[in-house]
Image (cartoon, rainbow, N blue to C red):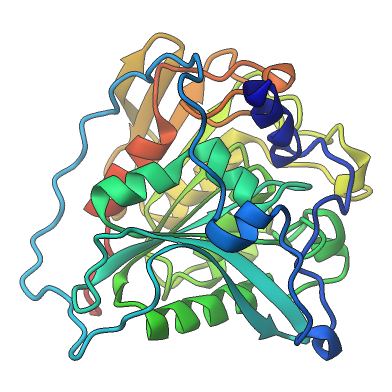
Length: 362
Protein backbone atom coordinates (compact mmCIF):
# COMPACT_ATOMS: atom_id res chain seq x y z
CA UNK A 1 0.00 0.00 0.00
CA UNK A 2 2.80 2.42 0.89
CA UNK A 3 4.64 1.56 -2.29
CA UNK A 4 1.49 2.26 -4.34
CA UNK A 5 1.18 5.68 -2.70
CA UNK A 6 4.76 6.52 -3.69
CA UNK A 7 4.20 5.61 -7.32
CA UNK A 8 0.92 7.53 -7.38
CA UNK A 9 2.56 10.58 -5.83
CA UNK A 10 5.08 10.64 -8.64
CA UNK A 11 2.43 10.77 -11.36
CA UNK A 12 2.46 14.55 -11.14
CA UNK A 13 6.22 14.75 -11.29
CA UNK A 14 6.25 13.59 -14.89
CA UNK A 15 3.89 16.13 -16.39
CA UNK A 16 0.53 14.36 -16.34
CA UNK A 17 -1.13 15.82 -13.24
CA UNK A 18 -3.92 18.34 -13.12
CA UNK A 19 -2.60 21.88 -13.56
CA UNK A 20 -2.32 23.74 -10.29
CA UNK A 21 -2.49 20.66 -8.12
CA UNK A 22 -0.07 20.90 -5.22
CA UNK A 23 0.89 24.52 -5.94
CA UNK A 24 2.34 26.33 -2.95
CA UNK A 25 4.58 28.89 -4.59
CA UNK A 26 2.30 31.50 -6.15
CA UNK A 27 1.56 33.75 -3.18
CA UNK A 28 0.95 37.49 -3.32
CA UNK A 29 3.44 39.68 -1.47
CA UNK A 30 0.66 40.87 0.82
CA UNK A 31 0.26 37.28 2.00
CA UNK A 32 3.96 36.69 2.49
CA UNK A 33 3.62 36.66 6.25
CA UNK A 34 0.99 33.91 6.15
CA UNK A 35 2.06 30.31 6.82
CA UNK A 36 3.24 28.51 3.70
CA UNK A 37 1.18 25.46 2.79
CA UNK A 38 3.87 23.26 1.28
CA UNK A 39 2.02 19.98 1.37
CA UNK A 40 1.90 17.31 4.08
CA UNK A 41 3.33 18.13 7.52
CA UNK A 42 6.34 15.87 6.94
CA UNK A 43 7.28 18.06 3.97
CA UNK A 44 6.97 21.30 5.95
CA UNK A 45 8.78 19.96 8.99
CA UNK A 46 11.49 17.68 7.71
CA UNK A 47 10.98 16.84 4.05
CA UNK A 48 9.78 13.50 2.69
CA UNK A 49 10.64 10.25 4.41
CA UNK A 50 13.09 7.86 2.87
CA UNK A 51 11.45 5.44 0.39
CA UNK A 52 10.17 2.33 2.17
CA UNK A 53 12.41 -0.69 2.42
CA UNK A 54 12.10 -2.89 0.47
CA UNK A 55 10.85 -1.00 -2.57
CA UNK A 56 11.42 -3.92 -4.98
CA UNK A 57 13.69 -1.95 -7.29
CA UNK A 58 16.80 -3.58 -8.69
CA UNK A 59 19.99 -1.64 -8.21
CA UNK A 60 20.89 0.45 -11.26
CA UNK A 61 23.93 -0.49 -13.25
CA UNK A 62 27.28 1.08 -12.37
CA UNK A 63 27.65 4.58 -13.74
CA UNK A 64 30.00 5.46 -16.58
CA UNK A 65 33.58 5.82 -15.46
CA UNK A 66 33.82 9.40 -14.12
CA UNK A 67 36.30 11.91 -15.43
CA UNK A 68 38.93 12.89 -12.89
CA UNK A 69 38.13 16.19 -11.19
CA UNK A 70 40.43 19.05 -12.12
CA UNK A 71 43.17 20.07 -9.72
CA UNK A 72 41.99 22.57 -7.12
CA UNK A 73 45.01 24.65 -6.13
CA UNK A 74 43.02 26.88 -3.78
CA UNK A 75 39.98 25.22 -2.13
CA UNK A 76 37.10 27.55 -1.39
CA UNK A 77 36.45 28.28 2.28
CA UNK A 78 34.34 30.63 4.38
CA UNK A 79 36.16 32.47 7.13
CA UNK A 80 34.15 32.31 10.32
CA UNK A 81 31.76 29.76 8.77
CA UNK A 82 28.17 29.96 7.56
CA UNK A 83 25.99 27.96 9.88
CA UNK A 84 22.63 27.56 8.19
CA UNK A 85 20.55 24.70 9.63
CA UNK A 86 21.32 21.16 8.47
CA UNK A 87 18.81 18.47 7.60
CA UNK A 88 15.65 18.81 5.49
CA UNK A 89 13.72 22.07 5.59
CA UNK A 90 11.64 24.51 3.57
CA UNK A 91 13.39 27.70 2.50
CA UNK A 92 11.26 30.69 1.50
CA UNK A 93 12.02 33.96 -0.23
CA UNK A 94 9.95 36.69 -1.85
CA UNK A 95 10.92 37.49 -5.43
CA UNK A 96 9.10 39.73 -7.89
CA UNK A 97 6.10 39.93 -5.56
CA UNK A 98 5.74 36.17 -5.15
CA UNK A 99 6.57 34.05 -2.14
CA UNK A 100 8.74 31.23 -3.49
CA UNK A 101 9.63 28.02 -1.69
CA UNK A 102 12.48 25.52 -1.99
CA UNK A 103 12.80 22.16 -0.29
CA UNK A 104 16.40 22.06 0.92
CA UNK A 105 18.49 19.03 1.88
CA UNK A 106 21.70 19.80 3.80
CA UNK A 107 23.70 16.78 4.97
CA UNK A 108 24.38 16.36 8.65
CA UNK A 109 28.10 16.31 7.85
CA UNK A 110 27.96 19.83 6.35
CA UNK A 111 31.06 21.85 7.31
CA UNK A 112 30.17 25.58 7.71
CA UNK A 113 33.69 26.67 6.80
CA UNK A 114 34.39 24.38 3.82
CA UNK A 115 33.16 25.13 0.30
CA UNK A 116 30.21 22.89 -0.61
CA UNK A 117 28.73 21.89 -3.95
CA UNK A 118 25.14 23.02 -4.62
CA UNK A 119 22.85 21.13 -7.02
CA UNK A 120 19.59 22.77 -8.12
CA UNK A 121 17.12 19.98 -9.00
CA UNK A 122 13.96 21.21 -10.78
CA UNK A 123 10.67 19.28 -10.87
CA UNK A 124 8.51 18.64 -13.93
CA UNK A 125 5.29 20.38 -14.97
CA UNK A 126 2.45 19.74 -12.50
CA UNK A 127 4.92 18.29 -10.03
CA UNK A 128 6.37 19.48 -6.74
CA UNK A 129 9.70 19.84 -4.98
CA UNK A 130 9.19 16.84 -2.69
CA UNK A 131 8.13 14.64 -5.62
CA UNK A 132 11.35 15.49 -7.44
CA UNK A 133 13.25 14.45 -4.32
CA UNK A 134 11.52 11.06 -4.32
CA UNK A 135 11.91 10.59 -8.07
CA UNK A 136 15.65 11.23 -8.18
CA UNK A 137 16.63 10.11 -4.66
CA UNK A 138 19.36 12.73 -4.75
CA UNK A 139 19.13 13.37 -1.02
CA UNK A 140 20.74 9.99 -0.36
CA UNK A 141 23.67 11.01 -2.56
CA UNK A 142 23.85 14.41 -0.86
CA UNK A 143 24.34 12.66 2.47
CA UNK A 144 26.89 10.23 1.05
CA UNK A 145 28.90 12.78 -0.93
CA UNK A 146 28.48 15.81 1.31
CA UNK A 147 26.80 18.42 -0.90
CA UNK A 148 23.65 20.58 -0.67
CA UNK A 149 20.70 19.80 -2.94
CA UNK A 150 17.86 22.29 -3.46
CA UNK A 151 14.50 21.40 -5.00
CA UNK A 152 12.85 24.73 -5.91
CA UNK A 153 9.07 24.90 -6.39
CA UNK A 154 7.72 26.45 -9.60
CA UNK A 155 4.89 28.99 -9.79
CA UNK A 156 1.64 27.09 -10.47
CA UNK A 157 3.81 23.94 -10.61
CA UNK A 158 5.56 25.10 -13.78
CA UNK A 159 8.78 26.73 -14.98
CA UNK A 160 9.23 29.48 -17.54
CA UNK A 161 11.71 27.66 -19.76
CA UNK A 162 11.47 30.11 -22.67
CA UNK A 163 8.68 28.66 -24.79
CA UNK A 164 7.29 26.22 -22.20
CA UNK A 165 5.44 25.53 -19.87
CA UNK A 166 2.11 26.29 -18.23
CA UNK A 167 1.35 29.36 -16.10
CA UNK A 168 4.98 30.31 -15.45
CA UNK A 169 5.56 30.52 -19.22
CA UNK A 170 2.22 32.16 -20.05
CA UNK A 171 2.67 34.82 -17.34
CA UNK A 172 6.37 35.36 -18.13
CA UNK A 173 7.42 34.59 -14.54
CA UNK A 174 11.02 35.66 -13.91
CA UNK A 175 12.26 32.22 -12.92
CA UNK A 176 15.85 32.97 -13.96
CA UNK A 177 15.85 35.94 -11.60
CA UNK A 178 14.36 33.77 -8.86
CA UNK A 179 17.16 31.22 -9.24
CA UNK A 180 19.79 33.93 -9.05
CA UNK A 181 18.17 35.30 -5.87
CA UNK A 182 17.96 31.78 -4.43
CA UNK A 183 21.68 31.19 -5.07
CA UNK A 184 22.45 34.49 -3.34
CA UNK A 185 20.39 33.62 -0.26
CA UNK A 186 21.71 30.08 0.04
CA UNK A 187 25.27 31.38 -0.34
CA UNK A 188 24.68 33.74 2.58
CA UNK A 189 23.37 30.92 4.80
CA UNK A 190 25.77 28.16 3.69
CA UNK A 191 29.37 27.92 2.51
CA UNK A 192 28.45 27.32 -1.13
CA UNK A 193 31.42 27.09 -3.47
CA UNK A 194 30.54 29.51 -6.31
CA UNK A 195 32.56 27.38 -8.73
CA UNK A 196 30.42 24.30 -8.02
CA UNK A 197 26.79 25.26 -8.60
CA UNK A 198 24.95 22.97 -11.02
CA UNK A 199 21.45 22.42 -12.44
CA UNK A 200 19.39 19.42 -13.43
CA UNK A 201 15.71 18.75 -13.80
CA UNK A 202 12.99 16.48 -15.11
CA UNK A 203 10.85 17.39 -18.14
CA UNK A 204 9.86 21.07 -17.70
CA UNK A 205 12.68 21.24 -15.14
CA UNK A 206 15.04 19.86 -17.78
CA UNK A 207 13.91 22.54 -20.23
CA UNK A 208 14.57 25.12 -17.54
CA UNK A 209 18.07 23.74 -16.90
CA UNK A 210 18.85 24.40 -20.56
CA UNK A 211 17.60 27.97 -20.18
CA UNK A 212 19.79 28.53 -17.13
CA UNK A 213 22.83 27.38 -19.11
CA UNK A 214 21.89 29.92 -21.79
CA UNK A 215 21.22 32.88 -19.48
CA UNK A 216 22.98 32.23 -16.16
CA UNK A 217 26.24 30.59 -17.17
CA UNK A 218 28.16 32.98 -14.91
CA UNK A 219 26.57 31.19 -11.92
CA UNK A 220 25.69 27.69 -13.22
CA UNK A 221 28.83 25.67 -13.97
CA UNK A 222 27.21 22.73 -15.83
CA UNK A 223 23.80 21.15 -16.48
CA UNK A 224 22.40 17.63 -16.84
CA UNK A 225 18.76 17.75 -18.08
CA UNK A 226 16.53 14.67 -18.14
CA UNK A 227 13.64 14.38 -20.64
CA UNK A 228 13.71 18.11 -21.43
CA UNK A 229 15.09 19.81 -24.54
CA UNK A 230 16.16 23.34 -25.45
CA UNK A 231 13.16 25.63 -24.97
CA UNK A 232 14.58 28.94 -26.18
CA UNK A 233 15.44 30.13 -29.67
CA UNK A 234 18.93 28.80 -30.43
CA UNK A 235 20.15 32.19 -31.64
CA UNK A 236 19.21 33.71 -28.27
CA UNK A 237 21.11 31.04 -26.34
CA UNK A 238 24.62 32.44 -26.47
CA UNK A 239 26.38 31.98 -23.13
CA UNK A 240 29.72 33.81 -22.95
CA UNK A 241 31.60 30.59 -22.21
CA UNK A 242 31.35 26.91 -23.18
CA UNK A 243 28.94 25.13 -20.81
CA UNK A 244 29.28 21.40 -20.01
CA UNK A 245 26.02 19.59 -20.88
CA UNK A 246 24.91 16.00 -20.31
CA UNK A 247 21.44 15.09 -21.64
CA UNK A 248 19.44 11.95 -20.75
CA UNK A 249 16.44 11.01 -22.92
CA UNK A 250 14.32 7.97 -23.84
CA UNK A 251 13.40 7.15 -27.44
CA UNK A 252 9.81 6.31 -26.47
CA UNK A 253 9.15 9.48 -24.48
CA UNK A 254 5.54 10.33 -25.31
CA UNK A 255 5.51 13.74 -23.62
CA UNK A 256 8.76 15.26 -24.89
CA UNK A 257 9.32 13.24 -28.07
CA UNK A 258 12.90 12.28 -28.87
CA UNK A 259 12.34 13.35 -32.49
CA UNK A 260 10.58 16.58 -31.47
CA UNK A 261 7.03 17.67 -32.25
CA UNK A 262 3.83 18.70 -30.54
CA UNK A 263 3.39 17.70 -26.89
CA UNK A 264 0.44 15.52 -25.97
CA UNK A 265 -0.46 17.53 -22.84
CA UNK A 266 -2.46 20.64 -23.90
CA UNK A 267 -2.03 22.32 -20.51
CA UNK A 268 1.65 22.86 -21.31
CA UNK A 269 0.65 25.68 -23.66
CA UNK A 270 -1.12 26.08 -26.97
CA UNK A 271 0.90 25.97 -30.17
CA UNK A 272 4.07 24.48 -28.75
CA UNK A 273 6.37 22.43 -30.95
CA UNK A 274 9.29 20.94 -29.09
CA UNK A 275 12.74 20.73 -30.60
CA UNK A 276 14.24 17.30 -31.04
CA UNK A 277 17.05 15.87 -28.95
CA UNK A 278 19.27 15.98 -32.04
CA UNK A 279 18.57 19.71 -32.55
CA UNK A 280 19.22 20.38 -28.88
CA UNK A 281 22.53 18.55 -28.85
CA UNK A 282 23.63 20.07 -32.16
CA UNK A 283 23.12 23.50 -30.64
CA UNK A 284 25.29 22.75 -27.61
CA UNK A 285 27.93 21.03 -29.73
CA UNK A 286 28.19 24.16 -31.87
CA UNK A 287 28.23 26.50 -28.85
CA UNK A 288 30.93 24.44 -27.15
CA UNK A 289 33.19 24.27 -30.20
CA UNK A 290 32.78 20.53 -30.79
CA UNK A 291 33.45 18.57 -33.92
CA UNK A 292 30.49 16.93 -35.67
CA UNK A 293 31.61 13.41 -34.72
CA UNK A 294 30.77 11.52 -31.53
CA UNK A 295 32.43 8.69 -29.63
CA UNK A 296 30.51 6.16 -27.51
CA UNK A 297 31.80 6.01 -23.92
CA UNK A 298 29.16 3.85 -22.22
CA UNK A 299 27.01 1.03 -23.60
CA UNK A 300 24.98 -1.16 -21.29
CA UNK A 301 21.70 -2.89 -22.03
CA UNK A 302 19.30 -0.34 -23.48
CA UNK A 303 21.56 2.66 -22.81
CA UNK A 304 24.09 4.18 -25.18
CA UNK A 305 26.03 7.28 -24.15
CA UNK A 306 28.11 9.32 -26.59
CA UNK A 307 30.33 12.37 -26.25
CA UNK A 308 31.07 14.91 -28.95
CA UNK A 309 34.69 15.09 -30.05
CA UNK A 310 37.04 18.05 -29.74
CA UNK A 311 34.85 20.16 -27.43
CA UNK A 312 35.94 23.14 -25.37
CA UNK A 313 33.50 21.85 -22.72
CA UNK A 314 32.08 18.31 -22.69
CA UNK A 315 28.78 17.64 -24.48
CA UNK A 316 27.23 14.23 -23.81
CA UNK A 317 24.01 12.36 -24.53
CA UNK A 318 22.67 9.15 -22.99
CA UNK A 319 19.92 7.64 -25.14
CA UNK A 320 17.66 5.03 -23.56
CA UNK A 321 16.35 2.75 -26.32
CA UNK A 322 12.67 2.27 -25.53
CA UNK A 323 12.86 4.50 -22.46
CA UNK A 324 9.84 6.57 -21.51
CA UNK A 325 9.29 9.96 -19.89
CA UNK A 326 11.25 8.77 -16.90
CA UNK A 327 14.38 9.35 -14.80
CA UNK A 328 17.00 6.67 -15.61
CA UNK A 329 17.71 4.65 -12.49
CA UNK A 330 15.03 6.57 -10.56
CA UNK A 331 11.67 5.62 -9.10
CA UNK A 332 9.47 4.20 -11.91
CA UNK A 333 6.12 5.59 -13.04
CA UNK A 334 5.05 2.65 -15.22
CA UNK A 335 2.27 4.19 -17.32
CA UNK A 336 4.68 6.89 -18.55
CA UNK A 337 7.02 4.34 -20.03
CA UNK A 338 9.91 2.18 -19.01
CA UNK A 339 12.49 3.34 -16.46
CA UNK A 340 15.84 1.82 -17.35
CA UNK A 341 18.05 0.32 -14.66
CA UNK A 342 21.01 0.24 -17.06
CA UNK A 343 22.33 3.65 -16.00
CA UNK A 344 21.83 5.72 -12.86
CA UNK A 345 21.34 9.31 -14.06
CA UNK A 346 21.65 10.75 -10.56
CA UNK A 347 24.96 9.06 -9.84
CA UNK A 348 26.38 9.74 -13.32
CA UNK A 349 25.51 13.44 -13.37
CA UNK A 350 27.00 13.99 -9.91
CA UNK A 351 30.30 12.54 -11.14
CA UNK A 352 30.00 14.83 -14.17
CA UNK A 353 29.41 17.86 -11.97
CA UNK A 354 32.39 17.02 -9.77
CA UNK A 355 34.61 16.92 -12.85
CA UNK A 356 33.31 20.20 -14.32
CA UNK A 357 33.45 23.13 -11.91
CA UNK A 358 33.34 26.69 -13.19
CA UNK A 359 36.56 27.38 -15.08
CA UNK A 360 38.87 30.15 -13.88
CA UNK A 361 38.13 33.60 -15.26
CA UNK A 362 40.29 34.40 -18.31
